[in-house]
Image (cartoon, rainbow, N blue to C red):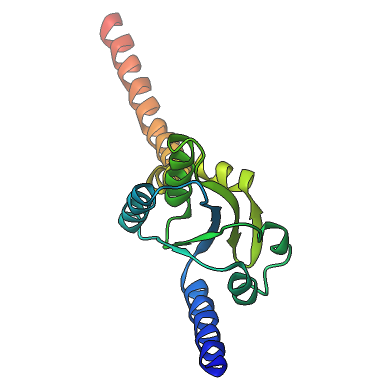
Length: 176
């Protein structure tokens, strides 16, 4: 029986490691005051964002995230893991909103991004970022600005020349 339990634990750690490599980031939360209804609501909304929420033992998390330095200080008490799909900002935004609306029954412990441990305040800062589409639009706008300005400068030369010709025509027409 012990061998079966050990194999099941190894399989769980392997699954977690595979899941971590597939995800863009992970957020660890303390969930001890959540009701079953709140957990269900939280999971449903996270699925809509392409994320997944699981409750995992701290020892399994420690083994699965062995490359993340400084994680041990956050692995105490109850720990729920949010596997972020592709949009960390959207998941962080929803999670921080949920923390506020649930009277802090759920608390963000930390996050892991590219093997680096992020504090709860870092996750809140990420949540405060504008949506991805807005950031992409700003980037595209700043990339287009020099080209647009250059086209405006190029268009100004013939326009000013045309103004000069019209003024010269008016000047000669008025003298005749």
